[in-house]
Image (tube, rainbow, N blue to C red):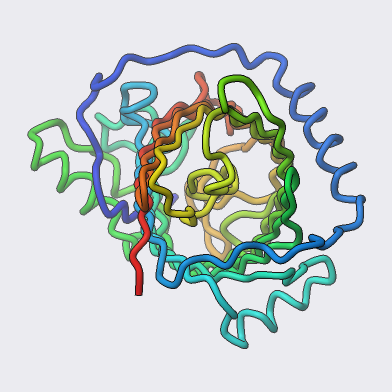
Length: 367
């Protein structure tokens, strides 16, 4: 039974900062199955390239800061405790090595326009009880994940009421003490004068990690009332590696103004697809969004434990679902988004669902 550390570049906030919410999940399997069927059908429709070229993105870079924390959801430090991700997206041709890797997938489509996104991030996981230093065999391990990723995005189709895009990504990182989870979490707790998490001596051991991921998303727009639009966006997703291996699909709904100015805010994977890209506009835009994603999980190192040596582990559940709702606002080259995510129980001994809040700010910097 071994150790594990994680790097969450920011924020582990005091307990009871926000009140917990409750959400009925007893029918999530049926809903997730329906979403998988829906998105599976969409995947078998051949991609049709747009009749007209998509508008050229402005020259420059699109930056994003994503913060995720359980205190903003459940009000406690437990399960998925914190995540931070900083991303930079550049429209244009990808580096040869990334394009060559993506083209090994027969279903990846470079499309009519491309962009490359680079990210650095960290995730921290803790058991429900962080007040004891004793190993808790029926609770999830302490764990951290410090990572960097490169992703290639291809816009397959864009016309008046329909967009199709796909994404290929490679993520490299490390779990264990090298991920600095204990230092980040307890250092922040010391800074704001709240109790430390006492069980980091039981975290997972150091292990390098790799994840290869793919996602495809279909966006359908319909006019609504008062100059607003409604969007329905099914997607499919998959990941392969020693950190995560899963396949899934989901559906995101958005309603508001200026939906075509972006592709929805980013999330730290696993989670709903989104990117920092936004089209700067002098007209303020906003939207509400809500979605569900179901995943069949073959590997989750943060529950299964280390790959090559004995470590603390728990019996994971093979099916997991996320439910997310939120609001986004954009003016000129800045977008701010707030959301809340309910995640169904991920292991057999987990008493309650995971809940966390997310804050994202994305902005455009011209060359």
